[in-house]
Length: 401
Ligand code: HEM
Image (cartoon, rainbow, N blue to C red; front, side, top):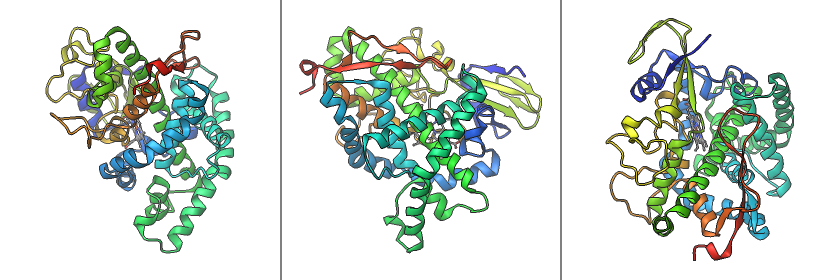
């Protein structure tokens, strides 16, 4: 069925909030997405979101951003730093995969490069399975790879993580001393009849890939946009270094231009009339064009297609547009990755910037720049406009002192 296309920002807002439009983008990717939070609808979705939301509270993000993330970042970047170069797509995945593993509840007991590489490989397969609808590869081949990756992931990573958490819960460990992650919450408070071992595996794999894939891609886009801006606007290069709130604004501008999910799909569960669209029969498929709405000149100005961290925004419009979704399925990781959107002046010392800003500032602080001898290349095997290979070098002369 041909989808009804919606690109008007107001109609998108109404549509993504409509109670009779259910998630439809992941039907092709059921092998990894069946029954996970993003694909649920109605009361089942509300229950799951309420259960898992507890992990994603602001106070926890603040603590995570200050205490845990800088350590994880330094640890993950150490080999690249020593080598004086890196490949940003891979580094982005390694950093963000550790981040989402913390939230999903996957322990990495070895903390070795091999362990990180194995998990990164599995997560890349899960994410290709989830976004199968946009894959340019034979679908059955991708599904077989997902099944194989799950068969490796469950005994190596998931079962030990479950065993450790079950033991803590059984021993009566106070809640505040238990790990604060999605897996713990599912094992402690979830309905065992709902959470079969297969569903737990898909839910946790979903968290790993949803967070890692979108954050890694967004980070590479933002690196590129900010690097080009600094190259072409030397005065702003100093401001981006000295003013982390302005830097965060630049990250949000890049997130607007390159939403990790360029479209959202929904299916009408009954006949509905959608604001700005009209009547839709039961079963109609709707494609909400988030990327297009994010470049709407009526909201973002005549140069909406261009990166400009000084762009004025109309009141009530988020600087990253619809990139984190909206409505019942709005991204639970938004403040973790994007930080808090400043409403007026903020205290730079206590402001929550989000992990993408922190990661990129750490890179530029080390003098990161694109490798002049090995230009970046777009990703193959997907119709999504992402970078596939982005070599960077660390130039001491450019490092922020
Ligand atoms: C730059 C990074 C990210 C972007 C651009 C992003 C974007 C999105 C979008 C657009 C949706 C809604 C999809 C729809 O309505 O169909 C979504 C949902 C979701 N995201 Fe993110 N995301 C990011 C990072 C993360 C991270 C780091 C986590 C977790 C640690 C996360 C967890 C989730 C969850 C759980 C949902 C589903 C919520 C629900 O269905 O109720 N995301 N994300």
